[in-house]
Amino acid sequence: MKPDLFTSPDYFHLDELLTEEHRLIRDTSREWVKKEVSPIIEEACQKAKFPNQILTGLAEIGAFGPYIPAEYGGAGLDQISYGLIMQELERGDSGIRSTASVQSSLVMYPIYNYGNEEQRKRFLPKLASGELIGCFGLTEADHGSNPGGMTTNFKDCGDYFLLNGAKLWISNSPFADIAIVWAKNVEGRIKGLIVERGMDGFTTPETHGKWSLRASATGELVFDNVKVPKQNLLPNKDGLGAPLGCLDSARYGIAWGAIGAAMDCYDTALRYSKERHQFGKPIGSFQLQQKKLAEMITEITKAQFLTWRLGVLKNEDRASTAQISMCKRNNVDMALKIARESRQILGGMGITGDYPIMRHMMNLESVVTYEGTHDIHLLITGLDITGLNAFK
Image 1 (cartoon, rainbow, N blue to C red):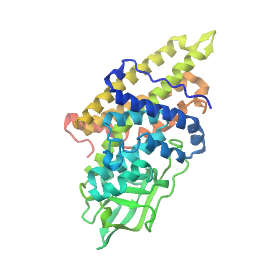
Image 2 (image 1 turned 60 degrees about the vertical axis):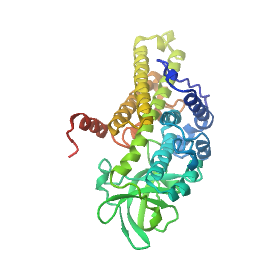
Image 3 (image 1 turned 90 degrees about the horizontal axis):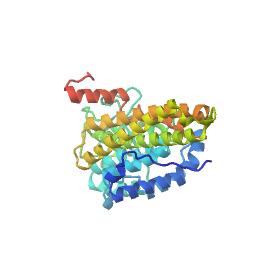
Image 4 (image 1 turned 135 degrees about the vertical axis):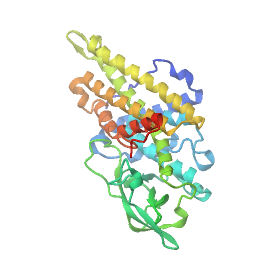
């Protein structure tokens, strides 16, 4: 295993816009990734196995619910801190960031914002410490970009709710202790339920054969007459806006995370261009290679400032869904292009596990699709600027 020599690019001195606390949080996360993720991630990816041993470390660096108040076990950090942690985790691997992103934005976020005090006290501290791991059930086999069409449903049976249906493409599901499940009641209203492992009729079969996010555990959620206690209903928000609010938080984290993947690819390609000699000199001295590298650092820099500004707006509670969609779409597209160009700089070596580029490229093919596809986010921007709905 090669040593992790990553050096973060900061071409326009963005660090000067961060607080000392921001830089400390980021650097702590970066060092943890170098020590705990980089040495094991290639083997985990090759074996298509999630490295469960890192869960405790993720909790220790505050990656689970960093913006959740300390009284519920979180670190009480701001949104830029959350973003910087996601950036560093995805620099290590998109699957590792996904695990933390799901735990924070798709499990802890709805319990904190939509749950009652009893639910917050019961679940949030254990989720923050990693004692419990959660997942989020919205997508179904026939309802991806149109989650409002879901068929998973529940009915009131007096002492409990009876839940039936299935969810697909669920990160963390094979080992999750709880699932935040979105289902329709008999009136067709979407509500959130906390489903716990061990409930009769609740199973989580794992998805195999992935070429992307191979170091992340993905599976299904299957509900066959599952009796869910009524106290497990999230009472404070319902309708499609409830799960979409969670996705706003998760997409914000992805926007930061994609920069991490792009920076890792760029840094690898830059270093390789100085070390690899052809025709008697480093390949980085050729114009076409410099063009690639110059365009990479330009796009990374633009994404850094776009995302930093989004973080400021998020801290002020002024970031709109459309702004988050634009940032997620831009940054993931940017990262994919940089991964592909970086792979070309490395030539044949770029497809091997000796370097992280091909792994990032394959991972980003999932990231560009999940939590809102590239095209759907484009239409969200279109709706926002025209007021005209292209979805219907």
